[in-house]
Length: 131
Image (tube, rainbow, N blue to C red; front, side):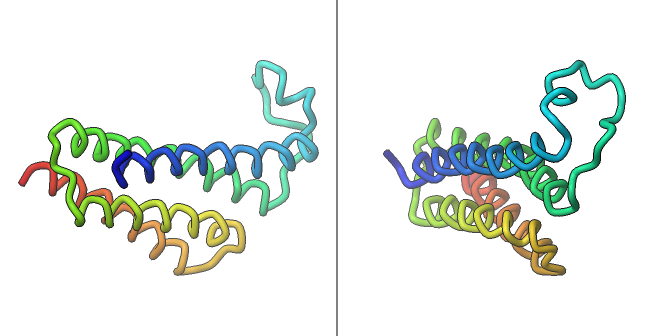
Protein backbone atom coordinates (compact mmCIF):
# COMPACT_ATOMS: atom_id res chain seq x y z
CA UNK A 1 0.00 0.00 0.00
CA UNK A 2 1.29 3.47 -0.83
CA UNK A 3 2.03 5.98 1.95
CA UNK A 4 -0.92 8.07 0.81
CA UNK A 5 -3.36 5.16 1.07
CA UNK A 6 -1.91 4.10 4.42
CA UNK A 7 -2.36 7.63 5.78
CA UNK A 8 -5.92 7.74 4.40
CA UNK A 9 -6.76 4.42 6.04
CA UNK A 10 -5.31 5.57 9.36
CA UNK A 11 -7.21 8.86 9.05
CA UNK A 12 -10.44 6.88 8.64
CA UNK A 13 -9.57 4.82 11.72
CA UNK A 14 -8.86 8.08 13.58
CA UNK A 15 -12.40 9.16 12.67
CA UNK A 16 -13.72 6.00 14.33
CA UNK A 17 -11.62 6.68 17.44
CA UNK A 18 -12.91 10.26 17.51
CA UNK A 19 -16.48 8.99 17.27
CA UNK A 20 -15.90 6.78 20.30
CA UNK A 21 -14.24 9.58 22.26
CA UNK A 22 -17.28 11.77 21.61
CA UNK A 23 -20.14 9.24 21.69
CA UNK A 24 -19.43 7.67 25.07
CA UNK A 25 -19.53 10.89 27.13
CA UNK A 26 -22.34 12.32 24.95
CA UNK A 27 -24.51 9.26 25.66
CA UNK A 28 -23.81 9.56 29.37
CA UNK A 29 -24.43 13.31 29.50
CA UNK A 30 -27.40 13.68 27.14
CA UNK A 31 -28.92 10.26 27.62
CA UNK A 32 -29.51 7.44 25.20
CA UNK A 33 -33.25 8.15 25.10
CA UNK A 34 -32.67 11.45 23.35
CA UNK A 35 -29.93 10.08 21.11
CA UNK A 36 -32.18 7.24 19.90
CA UNK A 37 -35.10 9.62 19.29
CA UNK A 38 -35.92 11.52 16.10
CA UNK A 39 -34.21 14.56 17.70
CA UNK A 40 -37.04 16.91 16.78
CA UNK A 41 -36.27 19.07 19.80
CA UNK A 42 -33.21 20.17 21.71
CA UNK A 43 -31.99 17.74 24.39
CA UNK A 44 -33.19 18.43 27.91
CA UNK A 45 -29.64 17.96 29.24
CA UNK A 46 -26.51 19.66 27.96
CA UNK A 47 -23.11 18.20 27.14
CA UNK A 48 -20.04 19.45 28.94
CA UNK A 49 -17.84 21.94 27.11
CA UNK A 50 -15.14 19.32 26.55
CA UNK A 51 -17.60 16.76 25.16
CA UNK A 52 -19.00 19.40 22.81
CA UNK A 53 -15.45 20.17 21.69
CA UNK A 54 -14.86 16.48 20.93
CA UNK A 55 -18.03 16.56 18.84
CA UNK A 56 -16.88 19.61 16.90
CA UNK A 57 -13.43 18.07 16.32
CA UNK A 58 -15.15 14.89 15.07
CA UNK A 59 -17.33 16.87 12.65
CA UNK A 60 -14.36 18.97 11.51
CA UNK A 61 -12.42 15.83 10.66
CA UNK A 62 -15.25 14.68 8.37
CA UNK A 63 -14.88 17.95 6.47
CA UNK A 64 -11.11 17.61 6.17
CA UNK A 65 -11.30 13.92 5.38
CA UNK A 66 -13.46 14.58 2.31
CA UNK A 67 -10.82 16.82 0.70
CA UNK A 68 -7.97 14.58 1.82
CA UNK A 69 -9.73 11.51 0.44
CA UNK A 70 -10.25 13.26 -2.90
CA UNK A 71 -6.60 14.32 -2.98
CA UNK A 72 -5.34 10.80 -2.23
CA UNK A 73 -7.74 9.28 -4.78
CA UNK A 74 -6.57 11.64 -7.52
CA UNK A 75 -2.90 11.02 -6.69
CA UNK A 76 -3.47 7.24 -6.69
CA UNK A 77 -5.55 7.08 -9.86
CA UNK A 78 -3.19 9.33 -11.79
CA UNK A 79 -0.12 7.46 -10.55
CA UNK A 80 1.50 10.66 -9.36
CA UNK A 81 2.71 9.31 -6.03
CA UNK A 82 6.00 10.87 -4.96
CA UNK A 83 8.04 11.55 -1.86
CA UNK A 84 6.28 14.91 -1.64
CA UNK A 85 2.76 13.44 -1.81
CA UNK A 86 3.68 10.73 0.70
CA UNK A 87 5.10 13.32 3.09
CA UNK A 88 2.01 15.52 2.71
CA UNK A 89 -0.24 12.57 3.52
CA UNK A 90 1.68 11.88 6.73
CA UNK A 91 1.68 15.57 7.65
CA UNK A 92 -2.10 15.65 7.20
CA UNK A 93 -2.51 12.61 9.45
CA UNK A 94 -0.18 13.99 12.12
CA UNK A 95 -2.04 17.30 12.09
CA UNK A 96 -5.40 15.54 12.48
CA UNK A 97 -4.10 13.45 15.38
CA UNK A 98 -2.79 16.59 17.11
CA UNK A 99 -6.01 18.46 16.35
CA UNK A 100 -8.05 16.28 18.72
CA UNK A 101 -6.23 17.22 21.94
CA UNK A 102 -5.78 20.78 20.65
CA UNK A 103 -9.55 21.14 20.34
CA UNK A 104 -10.28 19.22 23.55
CA UNK A 105 -7.95 21.38 25.65
CA UNK A 106 -8.85 24.60 23.83
CA UNK A 107 -5.34 25.40 22.62
CA UNK A 108 -5.48 28.80 21.00
CA UNK A 109 -4.11 29.67 18.49
CA UNK A 110 -2.48 26.22 18.35
CA UNK A 111 -5.67 24.50 17.22
CA UNK A 112 -6.01 26.82 14.23
CA UNK A 113 -2.35 26.44 13.31
CA UNK A 114 -2.61 22.64 13.46
CA UNK A 115 -5.76 22.77 11.32
CA UNK A 116 -3.98 24.99 8.77
CA UNK A 117 -1.03 22.57 8.53
CA UNK A 118 -3.39 19.71 7.65
CA UNK A 119 -5.34 21.88 5.21
CA UNK A 120 -2.21 23.05 3.38
CA UNK A 121 -0.85 19.49 3.22
CA UNK A 122 -4.09 18.55 1.44
CA UNK A 123 -3.83 21.58 -0.83
CA UNK A 124 -0.30 20.60 -1.83
CA UNK A 125 -1.53 17.09 -2.65
CA UNK A 126 -4.21 18.52 -4.92
CA UNK A 127 -1.77 20.88 -6.65
CA UNK A 128 0.76 18.05 -7.07
CA UNK A 129 -1.93 16.06 -8.87
CA UNK A 130 -2.32 18.86 -11.42
CA UNK A 131 1.36 19.30 -12.14
